[in-house]
Image (cartoon, rainbow, N blue to C red; front, side, top):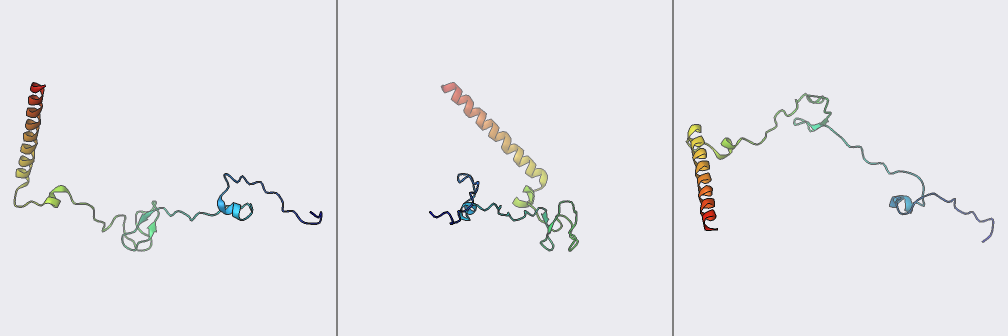
Length: 114
């Protein structure tokens, strides 16, 4: 090789740990920038992302979780079907006691056999 030919300057890049983009560009030292992660709560009124420090959206004034609907409780999901709450509690308690008695009986029978 002629001495006048320019040699590229050696770059200190570890090919095993360097990012692929850095290797493809010939070892130029630049870091790819990651997109900034937005943190906050989504406004239910306008959809803007509001900082966790705020209790209301500065754009529209909607408060935190205003208008949000969550899961209804179990009584609302299954409905009353004309049965009072006290009767529903009695049915659930009776079923639980019956189930416990059934399991105890089965375990007693299984213990007697073996």
